[in-house]
Image (tube, rainbow, N blue to C red; front, side, top):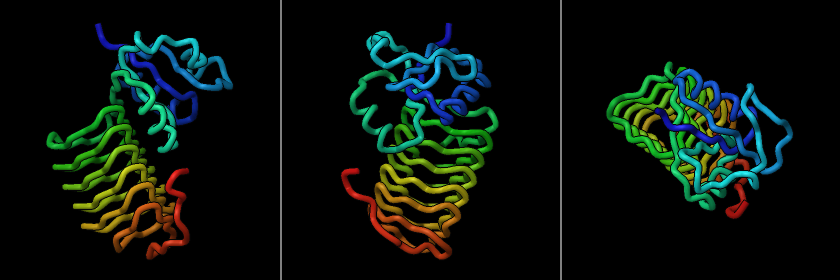
Length: 206
C-alpha cells in the first residue's frame, strides 16, 4: 500500500501538484487550508487546518507558491514531507533533492545539481549542471539556469528569466520576469531587465 500525501494550501499551485500526484498514481488524503474558500479542488476535499490531527499525517507537501509562507509552515509543522515530480520531468540520477520539493512538467535538471527543501522547479524550467538551489526557492516556468549557478534561500526567479553560468544570487532576492542575469546578485535585491538591474531591496523580515 502506498503513502497518502496531504497537501497544505488550496490554491492554483495545489492544482498542479494534484495533477502531478495523479500522474504518478499517488493517493491524496486531503487538502488543508487556513481559510478555505472552496470545499474541493479537482475533486479533492478541502478542510480547515484546525480539523486535522497532524500526528496522523503520513506525508505532506506544502502546496503554496509563496516562499516565505512555505518557510513559516514548515518551521511550525514537524511532519514527514514528500516530493512530487512530474513524469515528464528529466532528472539526472546524480542530483540531490531535498524534502517537500516539487518539480513540474517538462523541467530538466542536469547532473550534480543540489536542490534544497520545499523548493519549486516549475514547468519547463532548465537547471544546468552543478547548480546549487537553497531551501524555499521558486524557479518559475521557462527559467534557464546555466551551469554552476547558486541561488540563495527563499529567492524567487520570475518566469522566463535567464541566468548565465557561474552566477551567485543571494537569499530572498526577487528576479523579475524575463530578466537576464549576467553578474552576481546580493541578498534581498529586486532585479529586473536585460541586463538585470537592481531597482530596490526586499525587507529582510517580510
